[in-house]
Amino acid sequence: MGSSSSALNFGAGPAKLPKEVLSEVQSELLCYQNCGMSIMEMSHRGKEYDKINNDAQKTIRELLKVPDNYRVLFMQGGGLGGFAAIAMNLINRTGSADYAVTGTWSAAAAKEAAKYGTVNLVFPKADKPGAIPNESAWTRNPDASYLYYCDNETVDGVEFHTVPQTHPDVPLVADMSSSIMTKKVDVSKFGCIFGGAQKNIGPAGVVFVIIREDLLGKPMKICPAIMDFTNINKANSVHNTPATFSVYVMEKVLQWIKKMGGVEGMEKQSEEKSKLLYDAINNSDGFYTSPIDKEVQSRINIPFRIGRPNGNEELEKKFLDEAEKQYMYQLKGHRSVGGIRASLYNAVSLADVKSLVELMQRFKKENDK
Ligand SMILES: *Cc1c(COP(=O)(O)O)cnc(C)c1O
Image (cartoon, rainbow, N blue to C red; front, side):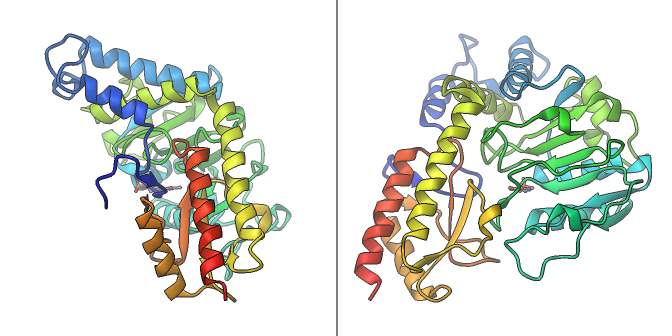
């Protein structure tokens, strides 16, 4: 990658962070608030980290209007750690859970949960990725401990634009790793929302968990203490040493989101950015194509192919090379999908997307013969 500090980063995760946040982190790196040392070198039980931890929880509550009967927890283990933690903390109620598998990450979550209980797939695995079967066709188990889905499939580019219905006794659990804080969400519809911070709200190393209080207290006996939501809650997310630096940076990103108009501001920007890119795809006479059903196209992770009829690897490689010359990075599609993928997380600006669209238009002119 070039050394230009103006690189346009469309990476899927870890992803772009707001430059302002990084500058602030840089200015505090050697000496945090007159403490004479870095926040990285300070106790997780000291008053400085205590404030960061509490402020981060408070800001998440504010931004997402989290109701009082929910707790905000931080843990480690990444999204995948979350998959195991969800099952070990929640599947015990009835021993089984419903999973809607719409792509790579929900498939991995269902596979993980099957180690700890019975997993019912509410619809058969789609043979054609890029679609979500209509909810009326889902087979649900009324005795499920929870209904699980991935709000936005980061690899596949499939997003739920409405919250699935669930039986009143079956709490809804959502992986929002790649969509958190990109749109308004009614937290009261959920039993639990979780995800890795490294896509939209911070660096890698921290997992956020927003959980309804009454769901705490029923972990499986085998649940490791560091993944036990009840434990983590009791200890205010310092049961053991957290990834203090990651939480510190996340707290700054959350403040940045607040300053940028909160979740409403992020949502508006997300709609503008994704519309711009989809318009460029849709108005290309089939030179660019989206493999995803229109109703479930993601606003955040946008895979597309270049060249008729369904993508031409040579052209795609050429496009990636040209993109890099313009300092646009991490546009290569996931290794399991191919093609191009642009990830438009919160820190990616409308101007960044405009540059990408300009490149697409120029590239089409030069290569669509
Ligand atoms: C990135 C991602 C994951 C995996 O997170 P890790 O921290 O790499 O384990 C899970 N779910 C979704 C939706 C993701 O985007």
